[in-house]
Image 1 (cartoon, rainbow, N blue to C red):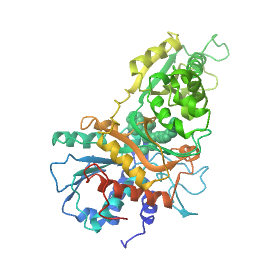
Image 2: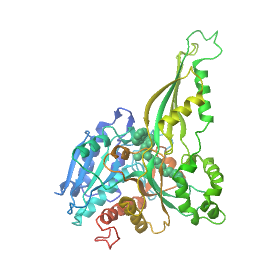
Image 3: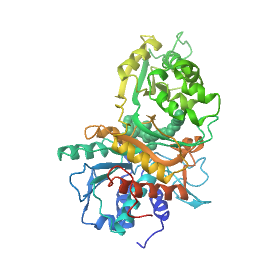
Length: 458
Ligand SMILES: CCCCCCCC/C=C\CCCCCCCC(=O)N[C@@H](Cc1c[nH]c2ccccc12)C(=O)O
Ligand SMILES: [Zn+2]
Ligand SMILES: [Zn+2]
């Protein structure tokens, strides 16, 4: 294949429909094609002697970049090549066209997360083409099943590295962004590096009742009983955990960016905390930062129009606040439902992750901060925060206690909705800046903490 332009490689990647449809449904043809594709567009990465490439779990990719200084502890960059499904309806352009129009590349995966896959490999390709030899070793792990929990990709890579005795200085994965327009009155963007992520529970509620003829219905059917139970859950939010969370720290760092009187209010959360937490929970996105969320995602019941339904089932997806545990949430749920005709089946449950360090000694955090300052000089605030979704990085807690989830991209509420939604797109400029960010980050990781002039400028 001839050499493609910087954004042409993204277009080609979006074109390959590497969709994870369900727990065991992946598009193996597309994933295999994706593997061939990255080989063809990043030839230098694949032929460099100190870059080892392995395919794990059939479709995930692990690159080991051997640094020249074995005394430096390695780190790892993560991304994933699979995407969530994208039916054509509602899209301005077909989701797998990868069309470049008006300065944007359109399509599923442009923000989540083929942008990162391609930007990481592109940055490495450019460094290698300039004969850059890293001092610090690093790994690049590209999962192929992140959207369905990463059991065949990230989990296997993690087990392999553990078996090899690898311990990492830190990990950088997708997760948070440079946020723009999420807080009313705050015009300036701010970068949030997620130092933890929420837990998750998929809980099935089931009600069984005796089937029969619909002409003589019982007072309550399985559908009615279950509908009332899930409605109680939806109407009863989990407790607001504002006081105990990281969000307090994030807001204190943001305080002086606000005009009077918000700056005073946010600097004195000991006094105004209850007021602030009530304001935060009013918006559905920021609400996810202060509590365990309850999302009714599936409902299934009934077999025929004139048959009393024997079974009704609903699935509820909870995202567990880092200040709570799965067990605590399940107890609360049982108390809210308070109906012993409703059975509980926990389909999957994962606790929130521990908080990674963000102090001055935290190498990964400080390198991200330093690179943000350099690549996005207009961003004044870099603060630690919580990732409200789950990422492949959760499979790597055996390799490091320092996990950071940050995409070097601007995100506004509209682009937030496009992730897993419709009209996902990335501006050409944003993608090029992401490449620049990783290009600088890799070089910064080779310096002795203090920023020094870069060996290469992009
Ligand atoms: C004051 C600050 C205001 C902040 C506003 C908040 C803005 C939020 C910004 C970004 C959030 C993006 C969410 C990150 C996505 C995480 C990746 C993802 O979608 N994961 C899936 C699938 C998944 C992956 N691993 C697991 C493990 C277990 C269950 C699911 C998954 C997901 O979370 O569902
Ligand atoms: Zn993702
Ligand atoms: Zn996703």
